[in-house]
Length: 389
Image (cartoon, rainbow, N blue to C red; front, side, top):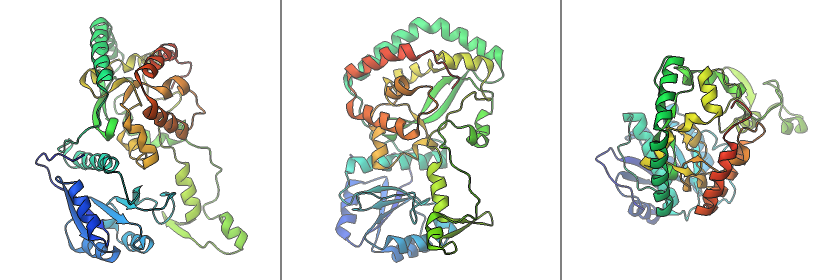
């Protein structure tokens, strides 16, 4: 799989490896718009970052004293905005632990799959383009949807849109009468192969609702319940050793234990969903509980952004948290209007983010025309939710 150039700025990768053959192999596998700069070790990488042009990604061989490199890397704030992908032979690596946490976004084996890494690079290039230009300049090679599934989607979506066009018109008028703002709401979503697209819905929230999201974290149904502890309390390791804190961090001029901080970060939810969301309008609650708000996604299906059955397309900020190899498998399946998670867990407050990921990965491994039909039939029964979510 090779990226396709579209007269955009090159995506600059700093490849840190003392084996020049691996660097050249990477260059051959991932040509334009990817530009590769090879350096032999971590200290050469630090020197390059300080003295040369900015890079968009660091690819680092874990055999080359990763801890020493990370300590030097974190010492300068301007460097720490560059994402790092680790090439490692460790079978299990916890990227939420020191020294990786907050800096290393992904880990691939030394004998990585070019197809898997290409999907990851495509996503990072698209994300950079959005941040710089507000649109995608790079046109990645997409993961292909099965032909039979695509034909089924086109025929069924066109038929349904033709039949329900009067309903769509009535709903649009009611939204205009109910509250100020546009009829439709579009948001950037990440679908099959990490491709970013605009997903359409009928607007169900008050205008400017996105700005309230940051202040509503405590209401998130996916948040894990954690016991509150004083910031200066010792962790279990220091208590057992009967010593002062051995791994202090200073955040907002307060000392906290690094181990406790890492546990708190792990407890933060990957997804966002709220019960009795105060941002939703009166009409919006009706549209959500009947799933009428999802009907404009039929246009996404007709365009090929989505399928009738698949894994729900995620907002960019959620997809960014699901990029390691195990979680990323969910993006091997098409983005869907409904899916395995919706018909098995929809509306249940006790569902965890891990359960949701596991269901998405399971669908990506086993989806077929038969399973899609079963999910569609089960969706018809699950449309009327009992909870306001």
